Image (spheres, rainbow, N blue to C red):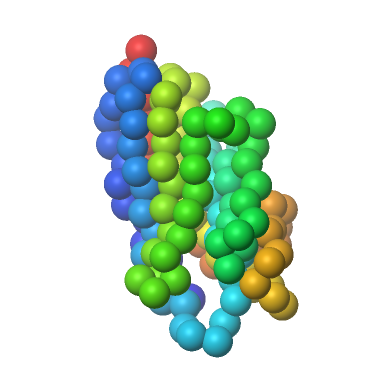
Length: 126
């Protein structure tokens, strides 16, 4: 499975960005897709995740109400809509895929993610 994240950039506080993650997941496989981020000097942390079916999502408290994760399986793409961005959201954002046994499972544990994209940098200026 290959993942390619894009959509990062420089935005002012209060602005919005939409990240995309293109995947090479084949039909018949089910994966929970997650977004993680790593700020300079900090450990990588969980941001959001979505089940294969798209009906279940989970968010870190720090982004709840501001970020929305979604997916379009027909296009093999996962999205992270980020609104009301804050300077503390500045980080490299990574998308990842975790194999699941059904379409309803959402995986939040970083260690369970099997595949990772290369990351895209989001910088929020104050």
